[in-house]
Image (cartoon, rainbow, N blue to C red; front, side, top):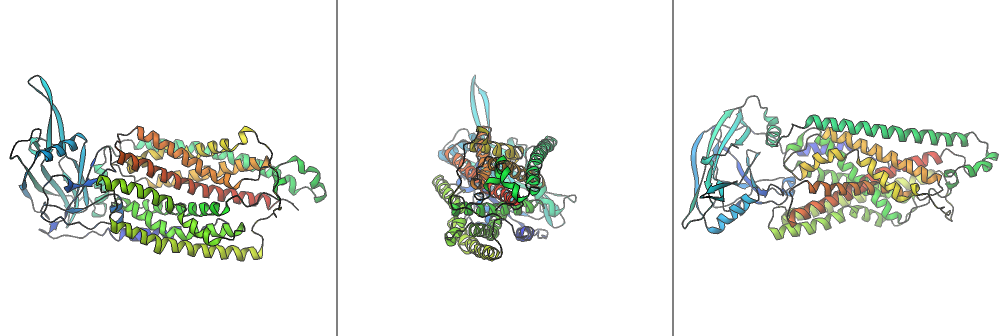
Length: 599
């Protein structure tokens, strides 16, 4: 019913090849120009609030030309443009003036405001990123009065490393002193600011060119590896805890279910009616496979969740080989995986819908294609409008918007339709050979008796949300620091293990509570099994508020991006885990009811 075609590794290989194709290093000859690109600026506390470098009054070329960027780079707000820095391969350069910039009071005020907000700027030297602060602010005691003095970084001393004919490292001295700074505290009539740079080359034979970007990114991370021991200890502790919970639940399920099954498998038919009242779940054989309410939306949600599951698996598998040090590679891999996974989502949704007797199969496919894409489009539309109002590079350019629409309309939607048609016909052929479910369903639904508090939907959602979430909350800290901070996440192997543990715990807890509800003669298990994902998504979004309070994010743009995109991720997580939990529960229910003697 919820089987997935074995295309995960093949699709991951396709994604990997597409990402690798843009990472080919080119050997340079002595004296050949090194591409230096200026990118964007942002406040340290608001990493999403990005602006173009030349929005501030720095020296700029007469003609500002954009450099090539991947789709992932554009989506993450990168805007690479040419610069005035002339660096040639293995050619040292003494301090050279770029320009003498005549500044106004407005220019000085904008620089001072940026320094107050701890603005950073980013540039690329041969595709190696470098980020530095705009300047520094210090307090000085002037004639008994403490005043603030502002210093702007106006001198960059590049230190570039090479191995053979390739650039393998690039740096700008972080230890700022007076020669790197100019005082901009007070503006004077006719004031000019001189910008300059120098270039020094050093041979780095120990750096493999294939690992240059990885080492460059890791070196730029503040305290990137100091807490690795604590990280591993926390992960191991989480896995041990989850294994104990998983073992306990499996023990309960196996012992209870096998006990019930053994009783029925050993009882003759004529004695079955005499003992029927002793158990609850057996009495529901004529109602347990009754179609849920709103089955079209239910099947669409299951299909959309399966698609997102395939996206996550493919992205993590690609991340395990380490290509995500390329800028925007995660976003690029996610988009490609989402398009490829559309066929799986359509297939599972249509197959389940046909098995439940649905007849509006065309609407089912359309709703499946829009279940996640629709809310994502609405969220993006609002945030993109906000970014445009702020003049931020977080706003997508019009060509990128048209490309995204074309990719969805020409690839994602057709693949969803194709998968839906295949899934529907597969279910129809299978239904002609044998019924989709082991028990027939009565026309009239059985009355559901009242339940105890521990059997309520609220109790189930809390337990099914809290226990699986406890398997991943530690890893979320590192992921959030990567997405909403300056660090790069690279422990995809650990993430894969944590995710597999999450699936095991979520599925096991859902199956356990489903059995309890069936034993209480409640046959409404379809949406309840899916609600596990909703519960985990709720805990995830609650964690987002906790993380927000630990940061220095401020301003409407940053807060809107954080909370709305986090809500979208929580929604996607709910669909994904809901789909997996439902599929596990469906297999469980089919298994126990296919092995009892029911008329």
